[in-house]
Amino acid sequence: MDDNLTNNSNDSSQINEKNILRVIFLNILISIFIIMCYFYLSEFFGSISTPFVKNVDFPLFIFFSFPLFVFTLFSILAGKFHGFIAGLIGEFLYQLAYYDVIYIHWCFIVAIWGFACGIFKYKPMKYQKLKNLGFTMVILFVSSLITIFLMRFVYQSSINHCIEFLIQSLLTVIFLIPLVLFFYDKALATEERHFYQLLFTHHPISQSDHTFYFKFGRTYVYFCTRCSGIMMGGIIAYFLTHLFESIYNVEVSPEIAIILCIIFPIPGLIDWGAQRMLVRKATTETRLMTGFIIGSALHLLSFTQKYTIFMIFIVILYFSIFGILLYFGSKKEMRLLEQEEQTTPSTS
Image 1 (cartoon, rainbow, N blue to C red):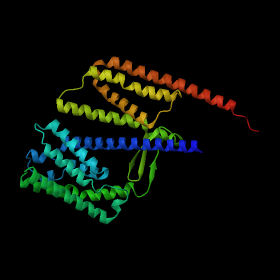
Image 2 (image 1 turned 135 degrees about the vertical axis):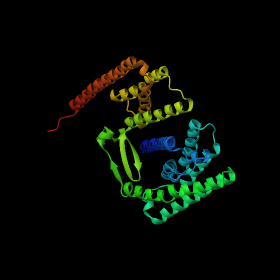
Image 3 (image 1 turned 120 degrees about the vertical axis):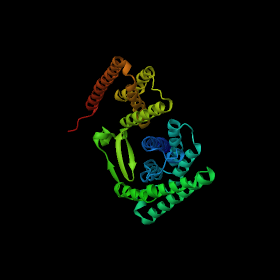
């Protein structure tokens, strides 16, 4: 009896630990995703601060700000802390890359805007109620007033800039964001749905522990865990190298890229190979992490064109190791199945 209780407590502690790791990973991923979106949109349209610190004249089309719209929407969906962190870091990175001077007060203005907008955080079916749509409009309007107060009385912005920001927020977020949240909620949260397709998961439902899901409203979309790590690693590596080039105007060294491309796939091969050879079972965390660094290596391949022939040899070598592990792992698995069939007593 005591042993059963001990085993149950150990299992529950492992589950709680996995849930904690998933929460930490997802929160970091969400913040990075918002930062990336803010940075790339700001490259095309200018950041939230650009019209004010660059003293750009306000033609009618500038009053609608795509970075402000997307950042506000993501802050509400993700929450106040994500909004604050992503706003602070995203604005700072953009200024570091494209401004001659860092306007640190605007970094905090954007961060406080994200925090204030994220206070009334999204929950499934929340925006099917008209009163919640109204609350969102009020919170966005109050956030605009707080931002104007900071601009005018704390950072000494001109009254014209304050009026321009108020008009921008009215046209960009105060009325439009609640409408978008209503349709988002209607489309993705009306009922609980699970999209589990072999095209994305590569594993049948019996091997669902090999998958990782993203939740949108009450809609769950499942992906292969290692492939998810590869995609995220490639995307984030692309962002970091692009950020490095934008800030320092220097490309990644081909020699450094080669070294990383050789080292990074090794943990993934070990983790996958050990699982394939039935030595140990990979976990969600190891699949994500090894997939992440493999994705980073795949992106870094684009910097090794100077050594194309050598890198082709390295890629062929790794795929050969992959094929060998796949072959011997399949043979070992078949041998174990045959042994189980021989040891299982036949029934009449």
